Image 1: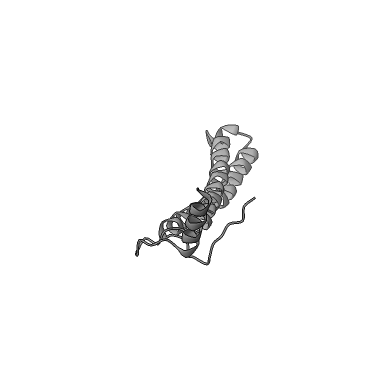
Image 2: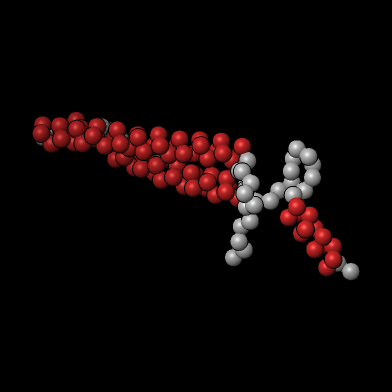
Length: 116
């Protein structure tokens, strides 16, 4: 596998924003699961104590599954955003000056030497 050359460049602003939003979404989904768990247990305990299953929420299992799936998907999106942010650090054209980075110039010169 080819090593990733970062050359100490900072990631792009867009990838940082996307990663921050993905991380924020993950934190919110974990908080939703964290707050939902005691509420769910409270409804189950009340229904058991009363002996009446009609006290349970109508879509209790569905909400439980959706909350956990949301946490898992937001974790995956956070990982993908982190990888995109990390890969954005590779050598790229300097947008401000329109010049290529030194490593890109060296690669271009090497390619020219190979072609007869």
